[in-house]
Image (cartoon, rainbow, N blue to C red; front, side, top):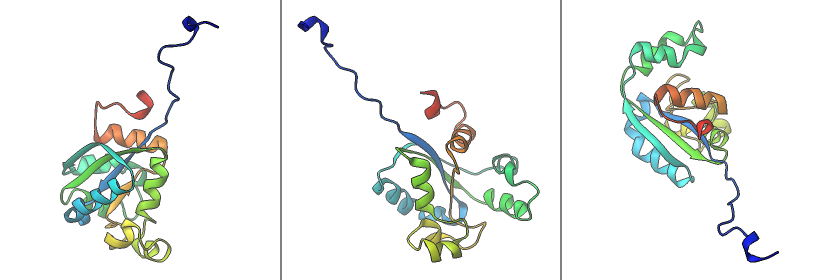
Length: 157
């Protein structure tokens, strides 16, 4: 083998960086700076960020999977009651790691099972539970496209 057979710049191994959607809900928006700092300290990269207030229609569309459940009307009213901070978080295993960081949906359960989680520290009830996290890779893809229309998802790159 001579020098002409060796690539000048060998191909780097592929690195998979998963993305997930994080929402800091109206009840925790005044803790947004603290929560963002904690997210960064856990090695997440924030690739997109926006603060907005959802319309009732947007909240209904975003949480459509819960339509018909008893808590749905109060969830929609809450989610458009004030500003939210929406973040796209990236790192290997982002969906699972963010889910672990936020803890169980109900803050009381979070306080028992995961007392350091964000919901244990900032949440008050099942609706006002401080943060949202995508439940799966495909859920994250859908939610990122919903909150950041026209953006490329990790599956498109």
